[in-house]
Image 1 (cartoon, chains in turn cyan, purple):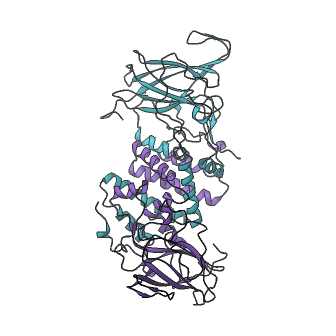
Image 2 (tube, chains in turn purple, blue):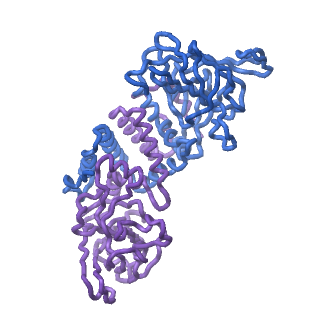
Image 3 (cartoon, chains in turn blue, orange):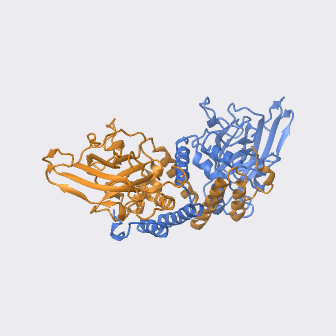
Length: 301
Length: 301
């Protein structure tokens, strides 16, 4: 390791601009130019922020505690820093910069804090609800390329909240995935499955991000949606939601994620034959959405 | 709670500047104007940073992981977010803004990640090392006001690394405090105690901040110092260090904390009578430092 004390004969009595310059300099020997550029921009904005608001020592301690608690409440099933990024609009900013879509391609939206890797495998036609409470909802659609050609074998991951407004991972009593799974498009690029109708829900408010929203008097509500992540060889992966048209929170999403192109009609049927041929005496919903993938630039993400 | 959806009829299809404006707006109903101002400045700098470096989704995930790990490695005895703030110079920036000292008053420096509340109580003349390894070191000094008048009964908290370069809390085998304690100045505002000579040490490098420094090829070393925190009724609390003159790292402190006024001579004595009257056949050190407190502005901090 190359130490940087060869160039720091002035690292003493540092305040204000001189301090900032010395901190910037301390990152000038980084191996990666990209890491150096990111850290130096971060340092400039961090110090400018501190000086702009004249942060007090008490506020600094509160910030340290807030960040520590945000890390400590996070688990494999709950990601409070993602929630923080989402509620500050940072997630949508990053998604917007990195997912410039051609006309017609499916837009991306927030990843969210409730994704779980290696969800259960299902076949088209299966019920992925796996006991999640809610009205039955029959989803179907297709995955195709910009020119309309179908993409067979595309991997579709699905996750959503149930009628309690909760994801499976928010229910400590559950040991198996519910309203969460993955399946592949068929030879015609089509997919279809049964689940439950998603409901609007508040983002988790029992942690530091909940405290932040309360202090801001911000609504924690998200409009009803189903998460989709779609991957196919030769195409850009898209991570997105399909939102339920008419949701009362469609224009006040706590994480700024709604796009017109991602809103779909969920049709309610009082009773009768469901799309899978079964006859239901209870009310159910149908929803149809077609995804359009961009070709990958140079390599699959 | 007042929800903010009354004013968010446009919260859809948000990108770039429109997204930033909407996030700023979401904090416009905060109860505390100070909280609102801090959050809005934070949001502007956060989004400007993201756009300036064009952060990728992969880098965003790395940042989420870094922040989460920084929270999760922290305990009651180790504060990795403070260490992060220290190594980015943020701590010294906040300290500098909040501790403008009159000429002659003792300057502040970083709090550091190893402070522990409620350390053992000692009397003047005691050995606070409590078994910490190192050459004996006899410290003495005074606490006085700007006009030179002594401050009796000032509370002095002391903590430091031993000759292994480790604080007690970094040694899992230790159950009691070592080279850490608190005592009061006597009727003449004087204090004196025995400890061990501090040694330079690397800040903890087994966590996320260590990874950050390695990526930057930055030295993790801090020059030898003893931490002092001094409180007295009617005076501003000062949190500072006394550094060892001549330390090889005095001009390359990993956390930017060195000030000329905080450097003291540590005198080495090969053997003989120590300041407390005992005769030592081993080498020992003496150090003398006088602290000068500012009157408190309106109330004690």
